[in-house]
Image (cartoon, rainbow, N blue to C red):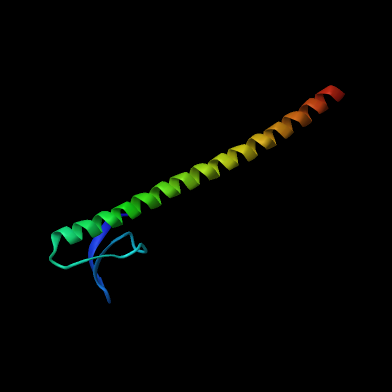
Length: 85
């Protein structure tokens, strides 16, 4: 999601990452103030994206452990079946 600026609320103009992020206020007409607000919103967006990637990797890791455990159990069952034949 991109950073957008030019929105206005009761506290003034702000930049935001996406649609539900924090509002980073700036002074209208002040390019440096707007650049700082844009940079802060961008950092928030990057942090959110990194967090999602980490969460997905953790989920994938847990899923892989669960699958491996199930495969190990199935392998043990097959060994017992083959030993009894």
